[in-house]
Image (tube, rainbow, N blue to C red; front, side):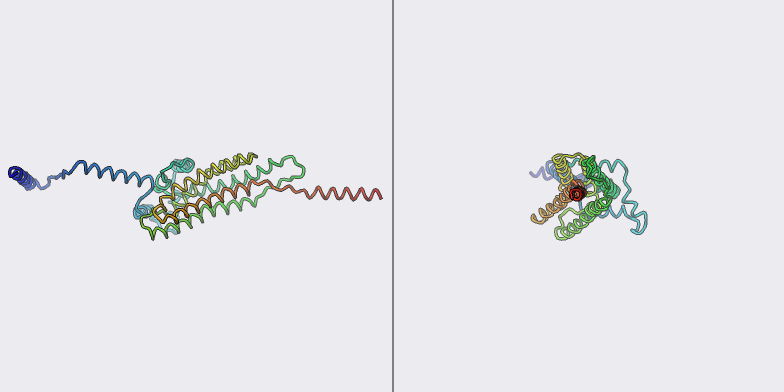
Amino acid sequence: MAGTNDLTFQEFDDAANLLAANPDATTVNIGDPEDSSGRKKGLQSREEEDDLLGNEDSANTELLAGQKKLAPFWTFEYYQTFFDVDTYQVLDRIKGSVLPIPGRNFVRLYVRSNPDLYGPIWICATLIFTITISGNLSNFLLHKGEPQYHYVPEFRKVSIAATAIYAYAWLVPLALWGFLSWRHSKVMSMVSYSFLEIVCVYGYSLFIYIPTSVLWIIHSEILRWVLMSLAMSLSGAVLMLTFWPAVREDNRKVAISTLVAIMVLHILLAVGCGEYFFDQPQIDLTAHPVTSIIGTTTGEVQSH
């Protein structure tokens, strides 16, 4: 035992002599390899979970946002940063919104590095025109050839569609951002999203309705409801997978109520657009009764 202690002190003396001879020498701390490997595995698993769910510090997000938006808000350069996105990024985000992957966060994978407004604005504008044009074309094809039906383009539906879609894509994210910010101040462990990130998620989640609205021209109620259910499921999954990490640390009732409210508003938009823009119009049959009355009156006069 004494020999072991002497050997240990001798090693320390040798190390001290080496450091005295070479002050710039580098020292290595040799610990338990099993303990270090366990720590590395724990850190790696935690980092992987953060990558999948988006559990990043809000300070890092704000720092990145501050590095991106250096120009004052009243300058053109400030708003130009919102559209600083290339075609490949937009296509990649569209693909992620159409094909949601369970366990993957849309914001963390596609948006957080560079949130944009180009995609949401373009998608909403395209959806407005496709849904109104498809609705008018569907009604025209349904009653084509009927003498009682006179086709009149309903341009007022464009303004109605624009109001509904843009209100959903901007006002709902604004309300959700305010609510999540308020809850984040009470539960600091919650994941925080910026308003621009939430708008980006809602805008890209509406892309699936563009091809769906075109297919709604087909006159089949069963097919329309199947396509509507599929579109609602895909886009709703994007919203659920994105906002679940933001509310899962909150009170269970609050978290469930938030997700239910998100889905209810999402379903109301889809069902409302389908029923309003693709509902079969009532054919004006007032001309037929008037003609019959005139014919009957004429016959009675001739008989007298």
